[in-house]
Image (cartoon, rainbow, N blue to C red; front, top):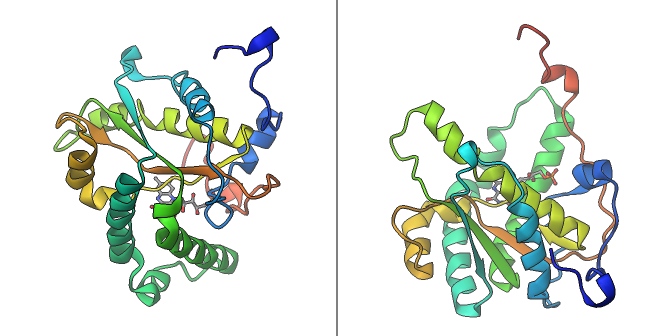
Amino acid sequence: MSDGPGGMRPSGDRLDLSADELLSTTRAVRKRLDLTRPVDPTLIDECLEMAAQAPTGGNGQGWHFVVVTDPAKRAALAEMYQRGFEMMYGDREAAEANLPTDDAEYVATTKRVIDSAEYLAEHMAEVPVMVIPCINVRTDNMPAAMQAGVWGSLLPAVWSFMLAARERSLGTCWTSLHLIDEPAAAALLGIPDNMMQGALIPVAHSIGTDFKPAPRRDMSRIVHHDTW
Ligand SMILES: Cc1cc2nc3c(=O)[nH]c(=O)nc-3n(C[C@H](O)[C@H](O)[C@H](O)COP(=O)(O)O)c2cc1C
């Protein structure tokens, strides 16, 4: 990252969070995306520089990041996203019926997530910046071991991007539903055929910066020592 005049980094919106604060408070931001405030492209560049510090299998660095700010392209991507959202959550009752019955807190949280996701789906076109991370290998028909290597060489960078964004007072939300129409998004953005898109990350300034750790399932349910 290049320093500004006098060695000062562009720090207007920096939160100076500790590593643990950053890791535990980088939330899926939807309703608190500021859809009216423009995002300085320098901030996106800085976050992408942080993203490119992530590891890749064999140091392949086959990642690419398409930054979309053009309003017509954002609107087209939002339409694809809405179609994906409709397929997954259009039947809200069916989506909620699939939730586990043995964890009331998880069910309540997930219902709130679906509410919030509905809001994002409705407002996606208004989000000022969308970032689509891509990787130069397609996993179509690959064995699982190779798929893991490909995805593992893209997704850590995406999370690093989101962490760097949070540190700069930007809100993000990992989304994947536009991929229902991946070829249409590729055509819209001129993404070559050998590239695979991994996500669509909406980015905007967050409304307020006070995010909290999320409720998660008890660690004893998910951690296994020496045997499952
Ligand atoms: C692989 C992946 C795909 C996701 N896809 C979507 C999506 O399409 N739309 C959306 O609103 N959120 C999506 N999310 C965000 C999750 O819904 C989010 O992590 C969840 O709401 C929990 O939020 P929290 O991490 O702030 O607690 C996705 C997250 C991941 C990791």
